[in-house]
Image 1: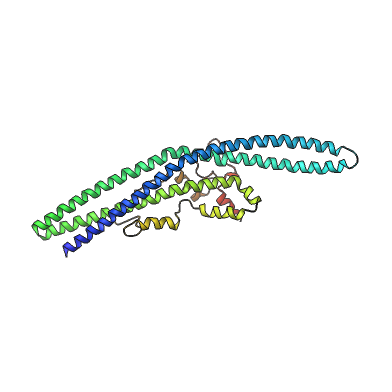
Image 2: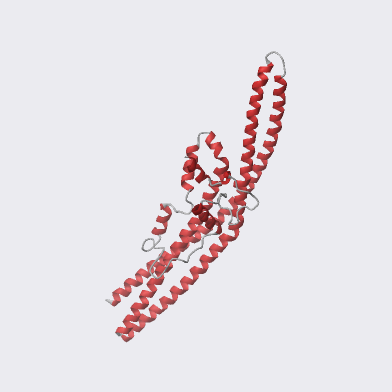
Length: 322
């Protein structure tokens, strides 16, 4: 019976070890995806800065154009015959055009404060934060492997002793060593599950924040073109960046030996990848709902800017209006 139990435990430990390796590879792949996506984010930032400069130049040209139109409208209003009536209508048109120009100027301001600046802050923070997250994962993973290896060596030694001495104490020592190795194997797998979950959340939130910032700038244009349902659908998807969708949880479960077990006996689940500063900032902002800063800005906030109601997360704003 003891031999059967040992064989079963060794097979279970083997499955857990394979699962841990699979989870580790997925975590490393997620980090690689984030690193490979960073150059695209940097290109987006450059494009946004050029776009904003073009918007600024367009606004200035539009303001000059509308001012010139307004002068002509005034001249038409002072004319005789039917031109006075035409001039009055013309003035109303130019006044409305002035409002359009002001709206465009506001959009240009938002492009800077709600898209470009937060993206700059995130890229700067993530250039160091992502490396630290990956280094922490590798360091802790190495420690777990070494601990598991030592437990495996002790288990093999205990089995040899049990086969030689054939005593009750040797049998108990062997069982204890096997249980210890099984426990460490499960804790290592749970650790890898936690790390994969954390890495997937880090990857998910950067795109949620990006869409959030993008919509906060261009939402009026979508609404004007009767595309508010598209905006609402996007906001529904990104409103919980820190919550993984079922498909991600299935991925973790499918690559595990015995389902999802972020915590196991003798393991409080406190280790794993610590959320990045940006994720921690977002968690605090959502929990308190008192910090109207653009999504993803560092814990210190955008010190050079004074937050306005327009800088509130559009997710919250959209549903508050309903």
